[in-house]
Amino acid sequence: MAAEIADGMAYLAAKKFIHRDLAARNCMVSADYTVKIGDFGMARDIYETDYYRKESKGLLPVRWMAPESLADGVFTSDSDAWSYGVVLWEMVTLAEQPYQGLANEQVFQFVVARGTLDRPPDCPNLLYEIMQVCWKWRPYDRPLFTDIVDKLESHIGQDFRLVSFYHSREGEEYRMNNRERLYNPPALSQPLHEEQFVHWKTSDEEVSLYSGNADRPAEILNSYTHQRHSRPPSNYHLESSSSQNGYNALSSM
Image (cartoon, rainbow, N blue to C red; front, side):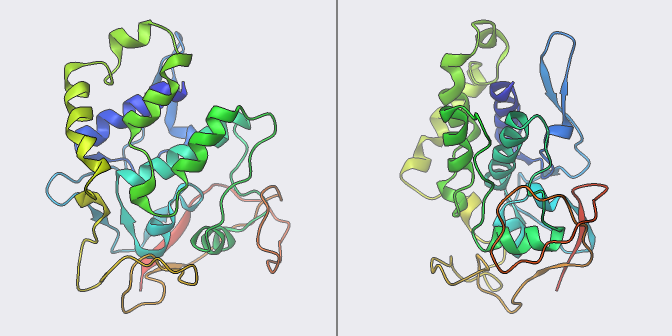
């Protein structure tokens, strides 16, 4: 299932689409255990610019979002890779809620401060290694979805070769064309508006991934609280009420 999700996301990336809401709840399993990715209500065609930047108020799935999406409203295939790591975590924990014990506001603070989910109990080494690389701080350091399929391929059946995007002619061409990523940073890792996001922040002291006029372009407007699970920063006070979902309202400053 993990390979099929990665393969489906590789197909979307090749078609210049970003999903923006990849989560276990949006991965549907058929009677023959084939996984289909659904709920494209937040998906955007990024063919022309390779970016979609959220400018208006709306509900966004903060518990599945990459730090650059939370802090700067930037969504790319690399931020989808971050979400995929959270999906793997959901699979291993049998659909536990990510960052249990943190309100949505606290999740925001935790992730942009370089916090990540803990390793689930009994998690296979390979899956945790993929989670870790998906949660790399710099988007460019995260794997392509075809890279993830490559890591998982030895653990899946031969039938996968017959139906996968990865093994199709189009998939092979996509992999070949993206080998240059090893040598040159892709357009996906560049800011959308250079005057707003001047350069990449590398200091551990910086919270925002890009420099700009606002300290925090994406502002949490409301939040819910959850049962404790993940390890938050020590200065967080955890409340006890439960949430209805993993979404939170965001707007740009």
